[in-house]
Length: 150
View 1 (cartoon, rainbow, N blue to C red):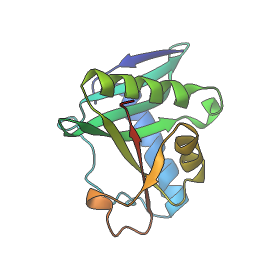
View 2 (view 1 turned 90 degrees about the horizontal axis):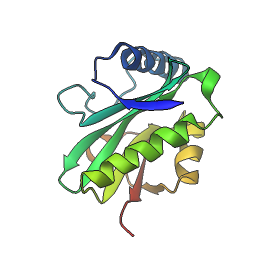
View 3 (view 1 turned 45 degrees about the vertical axis):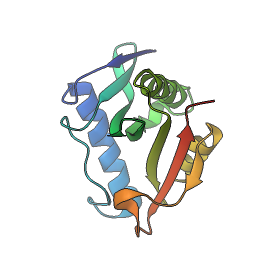
View 4 (view 1 turned 180 degrees about the vertical axis):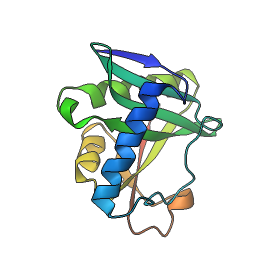
């Protein structure tokens, strides 16, 4: 597996984000379950894609919230590659990139219909926090944080 930083509009990145949206549409029963501001090329600091034998199998990006913290956006692993370490490798890459930017904290939002994601983040050291920003008041949102300083 190789993880590369790619532009937001990279074809592999776009295909993975589309697959993620399709999966979330099924889980939540609506194509519009995103309570926050949709990420875009204008606000994503870096976006990574994991490749297995040249095939894009997972992705994730970072959005800067302020000079000391960022938000994980669009973490996704193709179903056929789940359980193979792709998500852990992408998350480690995102955390390394955040530290390189001097960020001291990462936050993220996932949803109530994504228990697998909640278990993953908790296993990786992310702690539940009250909903922040655009997620305040969203009954479907589950928010987490991880402090990057020791």
